[in-house]
Image (tube, rainbow, N blue to C red):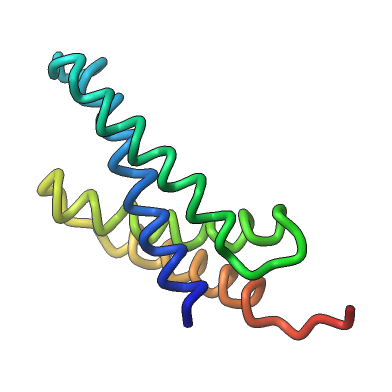
Length: 108
């Protein structure tokens, strides 16, 4: 359960950091947006090191599904755009894939 929490917090840190850059470059927000954005991206990278996995690639692969679902939550909560049924269906598929990677039995 701790792994899932770390993934969720990491996803929102990554999205917030990237959104800060997006806001600065695409929405003409102040360059000061880049400071908290950089901190958020640093937090994201740190958090992924806290995942209990023997292989970084596996940790990152599973994280991808969580990131996609979190991005759709961000889309709705922050940007005010409601995800459609295809967004939701795609997110469910990605979360199922992440669950297989996270919880699948390992032989070694």
